[in-house]
Image (cartoon, rainbow, N blue to C red; front, side, top):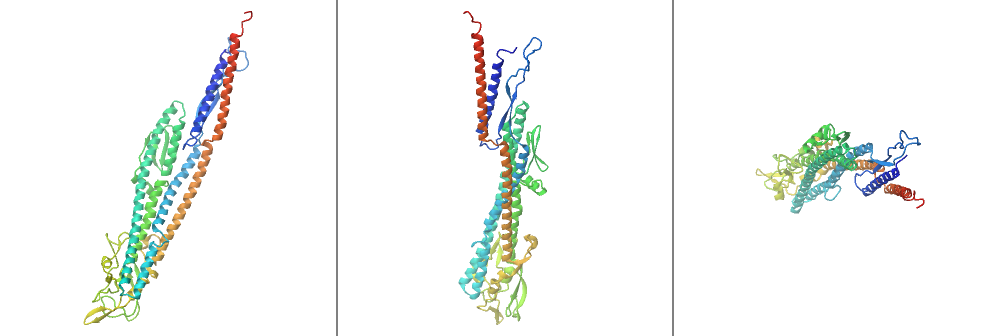
Amino acid sequence: MTSTFHSIETAKRSLFAQQTAINTVGHNISNANTAGYSRQRVSLTASRPMEAYGINRSTAAGQLGTGVEATAITRVRTSFLDDQFRNQNKYVGAWSVQSDTLSKLESIVNEPSDSGIRSVMDKFYQAWSDLSKDPENVTGRKIVRETALALTDSFNQTSKQLSDLKDDLTSSIDVKVTQANTIMSTIASLNTEIRRIEGLGDDANDLQDQRDLLTDQLSQIVNVEVSKAPEGYTITMGDKTLVQGDESFDLTREGLESSFGDGQLSSGEVFGMIQSRDVYVNDYMKQLDTLANTLANGDIEVTVPAGSVLPGTTTPLTVDTKMTVKGINGLHKLGYTMDNPATGGSDFFTFSSGTGITAATFQLNPDIASDTNKIATSMRTTSSGGASTVVQGNNSLALLMSQLGDVKFSFDQSATGNGISSSTISDFYSSMVGALGVQSEEAQRQYENSVAQADQVEGSRQSVSGVSLDEEMSDLVKYQHAYSAAARFMTTFDQLLEKLINGTGVVGR
């Protein structure tokens, strides 16, 4: 025989179980838009049945059901999809930074435009061409000076912007290192808290979601491998342990730069920053330095016209003579300024500091900048009484200067790194700008691909773990009716007991 109140206990268990399910549905709905949240489900299990009561063993058929129990509240999550997402997320981080840096480099180079280095160089050669038509003209000389100043300013400004970009990337690495250390420390704390809760037999669903969200964020900063151990997540980067149980091991910028060098750091935002700084920006700074120095001092072959009198000599050349000189400076030294007696030209470009010409130190010779008469245009002199005087109106040097745009310069191939040993300045610069465009396009394509793949995995993950309001509302109706039915069952049994207690045994009263 069963207990009189057995069914009330069964109804009560059903009410509690359905209420737990309804509460969980409400929790899911509340967090439908919470980043990293995984939907939760209540595991409902029939509670342990019992034998019918009897003196020895009941002869009643079957066992007595005792209702339902909510045995667990678990989150719906697939670790395989988490691993896939993190493997794609690290590429999103790396390519997003590289694409952004190359886009900034394109903005700095600013080609094609009316203000880029190419345009300024063309104006410089054109100024020499105009001066060659009237080499004694003061205005023409000032225009040559101003275009030369504009050219050096362009190199200086571009170099400064590249240097600033390099510093920005270094600062960004420091910021990311701090962010990564904070995330790792929090994950270690969550490992401890989750282990404590799960040690009590509960599921720390929300804390696990927070840990997974932080791990996702960390995977965008550096490449990570995640494994689950009894003490929590163990996170590594290459063979370096970042988090193990309740311990986290802080990263440093120097350590990450070392890891970049030995291949341990292979993707993520920090990888993209170091790659951008040490490869892309450094490469363009080096090429720009080479370009400036070659323009001033690179070997070029020019044909000095017959009749020219080279500085230090008094005998005019009898035939056109080919000779190799050191860039614009070398060519300028073959001519004569407007000073009398005849004075040979000096270096046209010099450097403001250091030991040589770079894009940052590139400058017009201060003597020429302050006195345009120091600009050499003539290659002919006459001698009278032992003194040489410049042939007025001769434009031989100015013509050669104006033709330098079509002359091939010798580049230091080991310094340029782009495989060009001999080309015009314009071609070298075009190859530099063209390579930048290709790199930028490739980085953008890689970034878009990595984002698409990460989005695809995230879509799959959301289809498993994401909260569907339609599904939650359906569950809510289902659990609501189950709760109502359990309450009706309790009411029904209450009425039975009312009849039994107050309606029986009253015959004859």
